[in-house]
Amino acid sequence: MAGDPTRRPEAGRRRRGAALEEAILGAAAGELTEAGYAGLTMDRVARRAGTNKNAIYRRWPNRLELGIAAYRQLTTTVQLPDTGSLRGDVLEQLRRANRHWSSPLGRILRDLMAAAGGASELLSQLPDQSTDSVAAAWLTILGRAVARGEAPPEALHPRVATVAMVLLRNEFVMRGAPTAPDEVLIEIVDEVYLPLIRNRAVPGSGGGDAGQPFV
Image 1: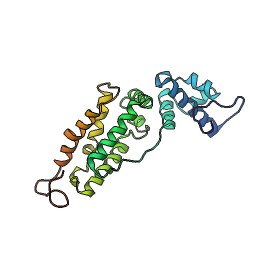
Image 2 (image 1 turned 45 degrees about the vertical axis):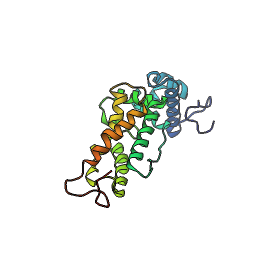
Image 3 (image 1 turned 180 degrees about the horizontal axis):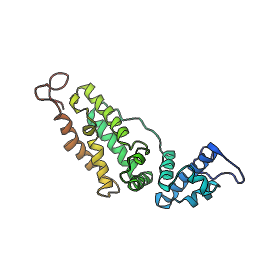
Image 4 (image 1 turned 90 degrees about the vertical axis):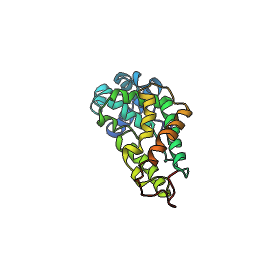
């Protein structure tokens, strides 16, 4: 199929530069899809791409960096939820993340993150997983809530904004859960995130647009 990143190259076709790089990434994406990160090897990718390992190593010095680059080929960018309420946006964002992390592609992501360990320069290459990109998404959601009068401006802090996602990530990374039940997501939102946001208001500063408490 045209445009399929996992298809094998035509026999005898000689590629260089960008064409060869695209073939290698497509082959690596295919291996990730079929065998996961654990089954990704330079030998298998080279055979699938119709090239040699040296051509791969010149571009990606190790299996992890190749895996991260191939993972980016498999992901798509989605718009942030905009349900009209902070609770609705936060819950929908968590549900989307939960579905992704519970999927086969999410398993690849978790394996890549585990292999990267604390190497921030590698983690930052994973789509929507760097500290800055995660914070930016959640600050956007929270900024909308501030504009609607649902949250105090004092809540616009990266560590505060991303608490819900951190707690969900812990379910997968720390607890090893294959998925998080919906009641866990609701608990994160209602018992932790929303109370934290509301309590960020400076005492005596009033509440929402009409001077009422943030709800």
